[in-house]
Length: 394
Image 1 (tube, one colour):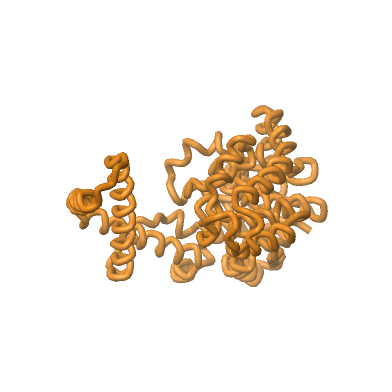
Image 2: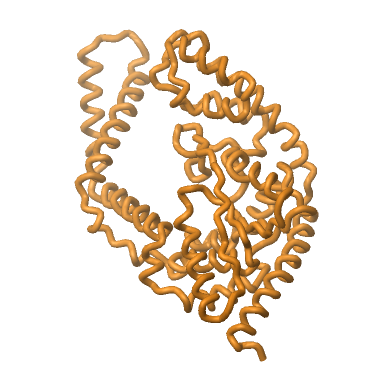
């Protein structure tokens, strides 16, 4: 049985990737024939200029894979662009799908929504005179300082009040703009490339070219796999049974929250990376968002909504019940809680970091060359079957 999964090369991986994907891959490679690939063509669909970063990003991603235990002796590790059959079969599959079907793909709808929100933000910045806003707020702050005769560093206090008022004011404006502007007013189609629209067809090619039986995904991604299943059935019905209908290998992917309480992401600059050293991890944990109602150490906490406690459940399973109870009762403060987490997380990541530092670029390139050759062999077998079934073999 064959399992197929991949990652886009966006740089070093964070602990969300580790607990959400890589730990699962480690188990799968002991049960199935696994093909894990760097999806460099897919990375181009958001911004083609990332092409200049792909090679260096690929090396960083592979270092993380190898350091956590993804084994090239057990799995085929390769680069999408080094297996030309992905693109070749993509062309054939594109003849089997309509434009209207692609418009219904969830990733396309999500992209449209993202661009519309971006358009709203653009309108907001174009239509708001921020210099005028700044003048009004500073005038109000001056009035406040004159009203209260406080013997402190007045300029420092004024600057702090100004930043707070400006931030709150602009946030209110932003929310108002989002609710008052009709989303339909924002044109988006001009910003969506043909490559992005065809992204799910290329994704289908990635899966079917290896005649994969399983694709590890979360429950919320089932609709993304459905197009692949449709195309496999359609091809089989027209040209004969070649492709197994790939099944989802349903997996729980934990949503790891970042420093600011949002989903951990490189784009949000809120991530703890697998390769971060001890001091960097400690500093990032120190800044981590926690329960906003737990201000003082003895205040009762709400661990169920705290990102730090969520990480305790992953990296500090032995103490999680004690931490939960002590947090709720007010016995454990956030500083001590973060220190407990740091000690466990750093101990977990230390051997991974040490292994990562020993991996050389030449070793990475050799693994990718060998893996890509193995992938090409399997993909070529599939393309021969495809062309023969279509009577295109000469």
